[in-house]
Image (cartoon, rainbow, N blue to C red; front, side, top):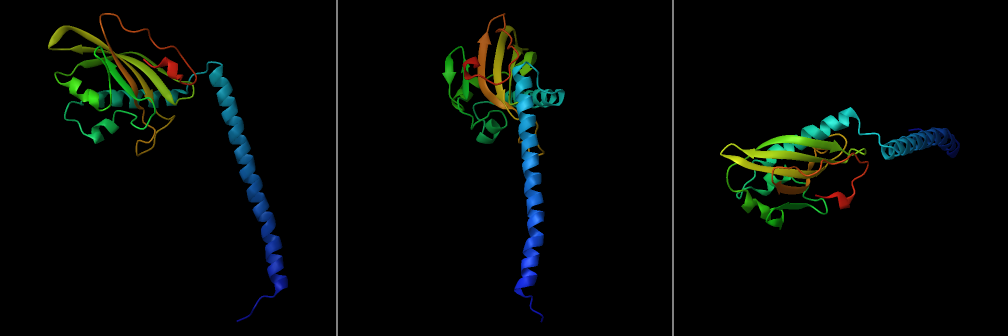
Length: 197
């Protein structure tokens, strides 16, 4: 077996150095382009540019799925059922109705009875596409005079993946009763905790 001397090894190191330098330069250029794109997006968001149509479609579809899953909850719901509906790891997670706030999953006891039909009346996605706000009108077929309004803040990410990682989940949920809905949410760039229902 032939052994390579120190000179051959030194040539190999010298030849490898430009390749490593080019890789580093490429990585730096990609990082700089990514930062510039993020800065441009932030500026557009602050100037009132909404989330892209694709981001809005994703937010609406997964928010509607979360609301449909919410209607399936009841006193016997399991933790896996709650994970399909709520952003359980999100700080400030809340649920309240006319009786006052209740913890998640403590509120499940209040969901005994017939299920309403929901009609979305307002929906807006944040300019940064990381949250959304909506209002759904709830009506009951077996109680014709009963109306409630579900005002909901949801949190998600701009696009999902095949495992549902970007799906929007309920963050704040408030039930209002009466004939008039709460005021519709205005367009916004980043979620402000003071906006919570």
